[in-house]
Length: 312
Image (cartoon, rainbow, N blue to C red):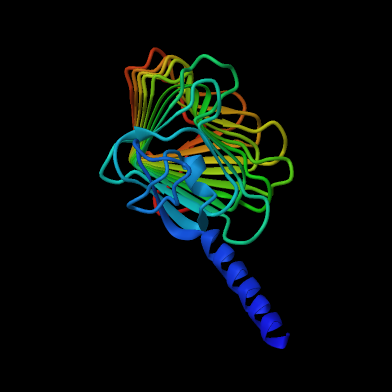
């Protein structure tokens, strides 16, 4: 009797271990245009969508695209990297947000999106290419975001400071190329925009209360409203630094401040061909390091003050 009982216990343990192994999450998974979401998302048996793969990928893991394909919209609820290196990986999301980041608990709530085309139809109102709701940081690198009726990237971090980094990325045909707007409970939001192109949007970059944004080696041009806007509704400041960039051909203002606590400081930047080069008529501070090019705007406007190079 005891032998039978021992065998039963052993069998139960074996089944439990086997079930756990079957449901284990991998640190690296794959998607393919010819995959299937019932697969384990391994390299030899890939899934078909980001959403199918994320449930089989451990927190902090990587989902890679094996070949060209549209892998669908996705809500990310844990630290994750999506990569389309070496292929055309895309998120086609007509009528819905392309990628939502909403990581509400834990530490290291970091997300990386690399080498992905994020493409919407541009018809449904209030739809974003990327919407960041909760998390610690988001890195968007070597991506192309287009045709969304709201923002290409809507970064509205929940708590803490929050950090957005956008590198080598093109954003076009959106209402706002990049919106940095800390949520009510957040103390601040930091954003770095490096080597990016923001064009043919209703507005290029918009930063609101408690945001701190650095734009460098980028081109904000051909937008149908303002190129760069620093907006502060209250006493909490909004700071934008623009350096080594081109702000050109925007229908509205090239650089604009709005509200007494709004602030833009500019260095080594060409501001040309805009409706108004510099606009601080609604309040704010627009300072220059005295090494910019400001010409050929319908109205050039003026800086509110100068900064002596080498001094704060």
